[in-house]
Image 1 (cartoon, rainbow, N blue to C red):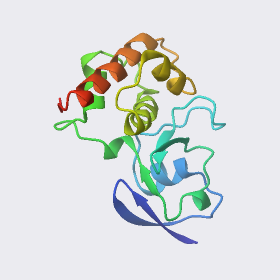
Image 2: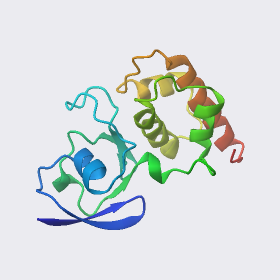
Image 3: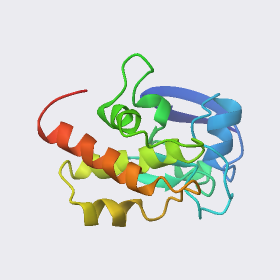
Image 4: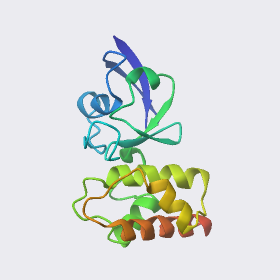
Length: 158
């Protein structure tokens, strides 16, 4: 079955059944490998993407739930040469260790910053709670989200 998706601002056609997880379509059909397969149960957050600005676990989001809605992946935020403020903050705060969870962490944080550009630490922690980092860089991730929020609040793009 052919489905039209809008991913990172571009309409794409894919042949997949309605129950196919969005993660599989992103990785296997569209070649967008930022979202990772972690648990397959929506419990770790490695697969997090944005669906209409909401952070969702793409491993448990069926393709049928995505049609006619905007999907945003980490590839849609910026490039290595022109990073988004959030991506730059993760680099500046050295918030990456193994890197497996980072795309999901960034997408969950971006969903927060899209609706609240000045969250306090408690809000950041609560929002980031569903995503796990097994390397333990949680404090650096918190600092990165705070740094990006400060940058956005000041109207700067770094």
